[in-house]
Length: 331
Image 1 (tube, helix red, strand yellow):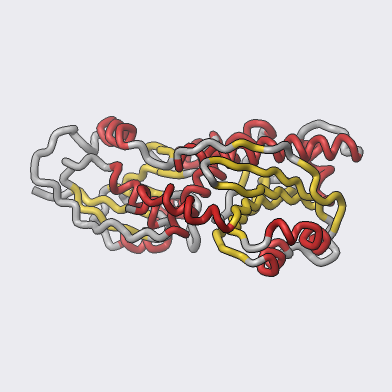
Image 2: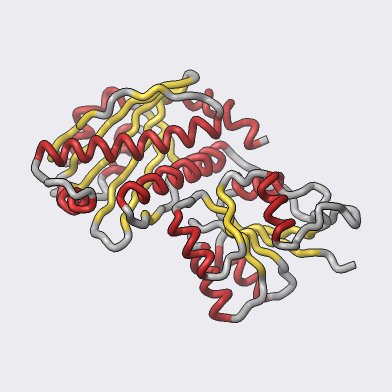
């Protein structure tokens, strides 16, 4: 009997591990893995891949690029997208490019089973001894936490997309433990004369605490106000930034809390530095930030000259507790 061949493509070892565990255990399938889209395409070009489980946000070549290349080159391979980017527009685009289905991360075993059955890829009964031939990847803290953040920021982007009626482009999140000086460097991607406004919101739950920092470039505030159909006058723009911060930070923290099974209490968002250079923001807050576990990523809005940076700054003593919470995902 010919064995069904499956390729799992995701840059996150954590995501690949979760997906492998979500597959029906009795499914007789041979599994291989790829860490980015270009690697997956090379494997498909060699032939013999029946189904590709494909992430969207990846380095080298993203999922959209893989789907476009499959169509352009006429490569025969069925594709199911498994992504943290759950925007309605993302689902529409991958469907238009030929994906057979879309599953949100982290993959739910029942939904995976139902999708495979609906597509006629799995009968629901084992006809042979399962032939799974792929080792689960080893996952470290950084990769596990990065994937939790990836899923959370995807949910936040989907909410923002609905509120603004736009498509939000998602980056790869960057997870680092930084000293305050290194945090300065991470934030200083803007030019030295760039004027910034930052909104800060504290959070705590299950012994894990930190602050979320949402940084807006002043030159783009007027464009955001137009999207929200608001006057960009100072008082109105500050209210708008606080509203956007509340939506984004709240959705992101909610996504993290759900995945690691805790509940965060959030403080009120505050304007941290109004029309101030980044040097001044760091100087005013370096005592409370000290050494921190920093997660940084930038949202950009397609078709508009708008982007803003979101950083989650976890206190140093939160790291052991986060590690414990992630242990069941890494195990």
